[in-house]
Length: 313
View 1 (tube, rainbow, N blue to C red):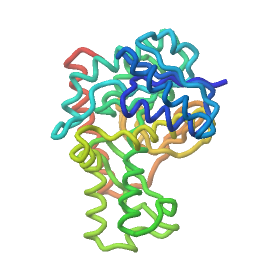
View 2 (cartoon, one colour; view 1 turned 90 degrees about the vertical axis):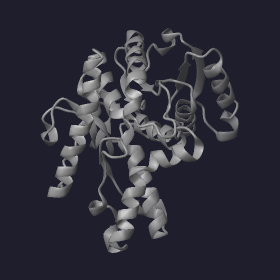
View 3 (spheres, helix red, strand yellow; view 1 turned 135 degrees about the vertical axis):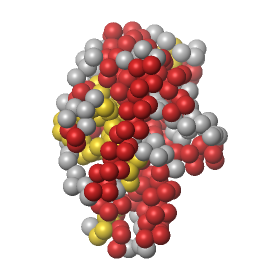
């Protein structure tokens, strides 16, 4: 038997539940929200697709009753306000930090052995907050951002190369932000061939630029943060833990001496399995990529300092 709780029944949380259910690797999913009836209604709607979609997962919606979190192996935190057009992830800190801290503390009262997956923005800082607020070991707290950014990177590469994303391997590291993420174009491949051999430098620069503003692009188009890809990214991360896949997934993890970084949560490739973050994979970065990673880490630390100013860590 396996159980996952998703906190926040908005677009991202509900999508995460729906994708996990259709992956059919979980016995029970709880969807929790503070708004009366929202989680219950969405859970009921999704349960009415079970026969149509062929899954056996049970989905239950609850309103603000953290007792329902009990025995969860994973807690997915999507709570907080979404990003609006023109709003940076950094501007979300003040509002979302208090929400995330409360969610983590309340959830762990009933599921103290759970892993925590953070989606709330600004994600690197909210992952750091969840780690500090929970007191959990580093391997049990992670943020989803790198999975999403890497998927967007692969999508833009597939458009440029006019090929299926299935043929592409691409990774984004660094902070989950428009100016802090690092699409590793040098290491990206299509059918094993470096993508840089398949496009001009200007085309490669456009793919990188489009990837870095991928979230902002969607926010401008739909008026709020994206939800399909973020929800699916969290589902993939949860599956890697519960199915013990040992996949290498780019995600936000705690670094204490790894990659030359200390006391920070930031995007790097990591082996994900039944013990959560089982290993951080060291990449052979060139000098420019190393400098970009250090710059990204400094920007994330600046955001984390806001938490200290608010006495939240």
